[in-house]
Amino acid sequence: MIDFRLDEEYEALRKTVHDFAQNEVAPVIGGFYEREEFPYDLVAQMGRMGLFGLPFPEEFGGMGGDYFALCLALEELGRVDSSVAVTLEAGVSLGAMPIFRYGTPEQRERWLPALCAGEALGGFGLTEPGGGSDAGATRTTAVLDGGEWVINGSKSFITNSGTDITRLVTVTAVTGTKPDGGKEISAIIVPSGTPGFTVEPKYSKVGWNASDTHGLSFADCRVPAENLLGERGRGYAQFLSTLDEGRVAIAALSVGLAQGCVDECLRYVRERSAFGANIGSYQAIQFKIADMETRAHTARLAYYQAAAKLLRGEPFKKEASIAKLVSSNAAMDNARDATQIFGGYGFMNEFPVGRFYRDAKILEIGEGTSEIQRMLIARELGLR
View 1: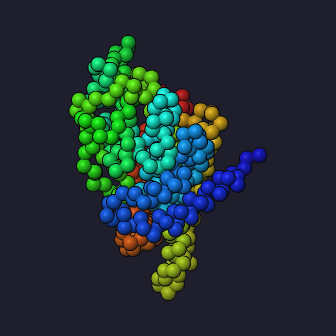
View 2: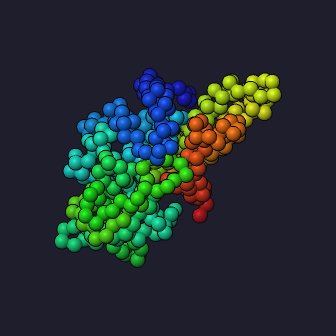
View 3: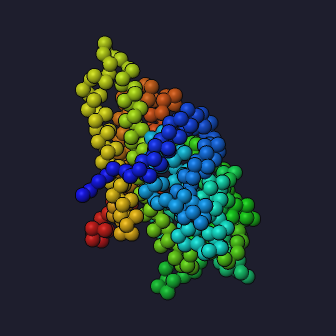
């Protein structure tokens, strides 16, 4: 029989992260957000809790868990704040996971222990200023010269790329031409501080203001040939696979935001009175919150199914795109409705729903726009 109940281990993890989010993150994150300041202390606490190592084997300093465990943690963090949640999500799925999946034993030994401990962060440089969703239009180049890759180009919107604990960024670059004339795209690890690697000033963003996002530039940046990650010419394919997993994680984060909107509205409507009655007694408010809960519930089931197929080793591309599409839409819709329920207070940074509203939109864009998800779903249905 189908059973969506969490087993004892998953439930214990969920509760632990829930308590951390409510007791440690919620009281302070608003200040970090308004100051646009990266929350190093919170990240360090998550590292000590083992959250950055959740899906990795113990031999690399991980917790020996799985990707669904990471998703549960992201949902609970997302119920309180998306900046903290996306720092974990990107640190694991974009920073450490490609090294775990495709790295050599030496690369894993060098990088994974610190990444799993949350003592270091990694980023992945895929998007370029003129590329956007067209990641295949990569213009950054890497040429082998005397046992070194010489990298030139630029990347944009790269999470976790400029913090004090960022140790590396893996970048996609054109390393040659394929027999059919197309671009040969490979992935290369670039350690922070490498000469010729410049982290541009941080972006002024609409949301995710307590997370780290920068553009990157490379000018004759040299790294050893052994910094190639995975097979030469397979960088683009490797990252497409990484994105499939990441979409399940972003779906979980989105569900967290959607559920957080419900949480905040339930607290608010029980305290707020208007026209002589508690506003939670008005059917218009009740129906709106009922719709919000329905969206969060439905989206959670979508990412649960995608995660289940991922863990079983079954194809899950379509399910990942469905989960990401449904969940990000739920987050955006719930944030809008929550702000409406709060009225003028919803427009104030004093209340979390204002932050949720600003954070929700990027969930429909990052790690594949909603339009890209629809395209992928259609392809999986055989529509070309």
